Image 1 (cartoon, rainbow, N blue to C red):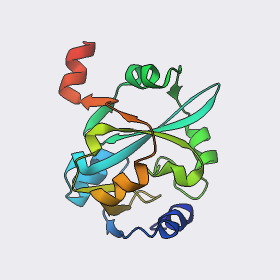
Image 2 (cartoon, rainbow, N blue to C red):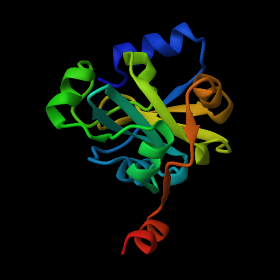
Image 3 (cartoon, one colour):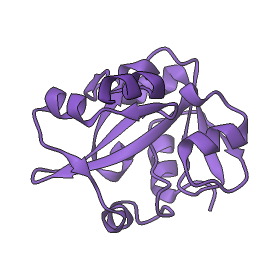
Image 4 (spheres, rainbow, N blue to C red):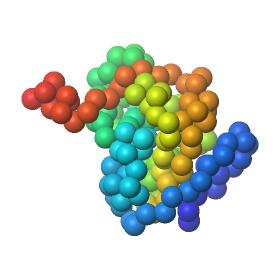
Length: 164
């Protein structure tokens, strides 16, 4: 598949330059980063959340863990993880689990982690488990600038310390 049609149309509409990075099949964003030989903190993973008010996608560095409490506090919601079936219905032109961080292209609300603000380059899932989209950090920030953002994740070591 390479790039999901919806995502490609969104990038073209916003005149964003990008290239694709092919890598062996992986099942997680951190594995995609490792497989593609890119720094995990530059790989933006998307976590789909939902509550009675609808869906929202949290975007964070793949090297981090989402802190659902921080997201709920920031948005004043009671979000939980979306199910795999819900992902399939939201991202019809993507393989299950290969959720693009630019989920605004799919009409979804997004909150993104401030830790992505300083990345010189950002990589996101392209819609399958073998391709990434590479954007300049500047273009990524431009696409995300009007969306809510905060610190919503932490490195695994910090998360373990806080919760164990």
